[in-house]
Amino acid sequence: MLFPFLWMVSSSLKNSVEAFATPPTLFPKEPTLENYRNVFRLLDMPRLFLNSIVVSLVCVFLQLATSALAGYAFARLQFKAKNAIFLVYLATMMIPFQVIIVPLFIGMRQFGLIDSYVGMGLPMIASAFGVFLMRQAMLAIPRELEEAAILDGANHFRLFFSVALPLCIPTLAALGILSFMSVWNAYLWPLVIIFSPEKMTLPLALSNLHGENLTDWPMVMAATTIATLPIAIVYLILQKQIAQSFLTAGLKG
Amino acid sequence: MIKNKHGRTAALFIAPSFLPLIAFFILPMLAAGVLSFTSWDLLSPPQWIGLDNFRELIVDKDFLLSLRNTLLFIAGYLPLVYFLGLAAALALNRKFKGSTGLRAAYFLPVVTSWVIVALLWKWILNPNGGLVNSGLAAIGIEGPGWWASKEWSMISVIVPSAWKDLGYVMLILLAGLQAIPPEYKEAASIDGASKRQILFRITLPLLTPATFFVLVISLINNFQVFDQIWVMTEGGPEGSTSVVVQQIVKNSFEYGHMGYASALSMVLFLIIMIITAAQVRLQKRWVKYE
Image (cartoon, rainbow over all chains, first blue to last red; front, side, top):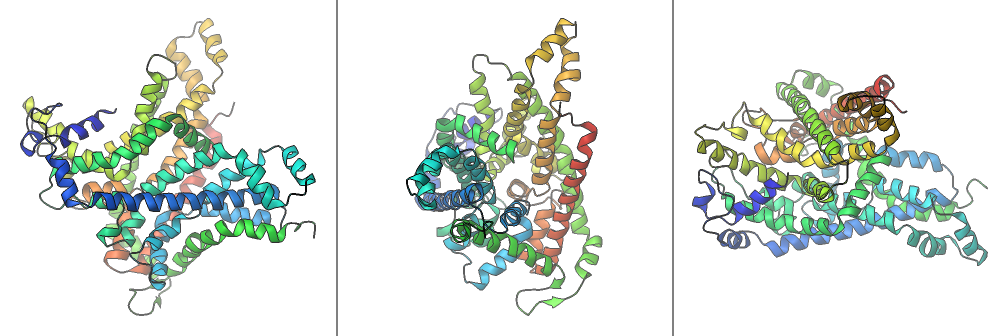
């Protein structure tokens, strides 16, 4: 199952002759770091990582913040049209991205946001799914804890920050992981909206590495190895939580 | 007034997520609906053309081909990912040495980006010197053209897709398996049932809710398949792997037929909704919520 990954790393360490050898070898006879050098020569790796990291962290933070706020409102506040508004959130989750990609692009164009970080990130700052998850989490908070704080004169903002939020940290973590993966790996929207190489995210730049005709495969494998490292590391550390997040999300969604 | 007790506060709490979702999902969705009745090239003002886009797409050969390809993709992908996921879930249902590690191994592809998966498999299935063909050459077989050939391109995109999603399907099915009370299986084996009988008469039927979930989610997601196919074959060769989403992207960003692309996307949306609704209806027939 993991063999393809091993092959990826193995290929990245081969020179171009050995990479195409028959029969294929798992351990390179003449390992070389040439491919990695080429990747760094061809792609501005630090910049790409920076772009991906910044866009991902900012979007995840905003998704968590906006979702937690709305989740609290749906769990604890009473207001007009509460159910209708929640239905709108649900409806958003059913909209396939391809349906909105054209109008979204046109809209971005109207506001001069084509080929900009803002344009790339805006559609990812809120998450209806996040609101759904946070609402579930906040509903589960025992009311006694809040009642005690209310007796002490706390208003809802206080309640949110001091009582509700801390108790939702596991869900926030799960949501954070899922959101991070989704933003980091986003491909179609950045593909459509970004042209300048210096603004590209990692997946985008990677897909440009192989051209119509001659592809330097060992180098491409080096690039993908580098790109897989962050996710692999995060994954190895947070394995359990990640699987848990998918389960919580999957079985409730 | 009691109903709106927290009106103002609620507005502040809801707005940060509600407004962006309205702006970036709901409004574009409505706009797409309207756009599908127009013809617009972004240069001159849009022209209202009523149902013409829809009349055109019914006979659009490229679109019909992409629809066929999408269905073919799903027909190949779904059984593969389900049965492999099921086998993995059944095998890993017990705790044995290394089972946690194995479960983790299956899940690593799930968290990897489609671009990386597509590039990796494009190299593995490279007609010239890729792992598979090199291995075949070593035993004297000439490997096919994989993603570069019309006949094998679909398989070449189905396999990596199933490989990547396997872990996710396995996870869902595993959770379903672990929800089955062991007493059922024990009672059956005491009664003399064979392993096979237990599997088919008890385990699988009780697994139908999880199976249903996998089915619904997979169909919704894979009707929209794009990323990995685009990276691996760009829809070729000769349109053999061109899918519906690619047609939407092509018609809008390459040809500039914004109205037509919107119409295509609406049709896709409709298809997904109808199929999902049909599945929800049909679940009474075969899903056993014990």
